[in-house]
Amino acid sequence: AIAPGKALHGEQCGVGAIMMLYLHGEDWKSVRDVLKEIGAPTNAKELGIPKKKIVEALVMAHSIRPDRYTILGEGGLTKEAAKSIAKKTGVI
Image (cartoon, rainbow, N blue to C red):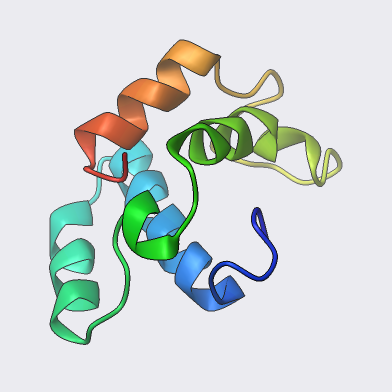
């Protein structure tokens, strides 16, 4: 969890899934819309998490389990790329 006590882990995963689906070139908008339909958060504000924490989480995510493959690659995302993804998906 990137902000313990702010939002449920699963809620944070749902928002993260929106951004990862965007990176995979998948239909992230449908997932976002379904989450909205059920009343789940779809952005940083609804999670109660500062925008900068979302960007920080994306930048450091690749290093959490360095032994596993991730779409973020070995070098992860730059701060600029992370911010761009979060903005394009409406997360921030």
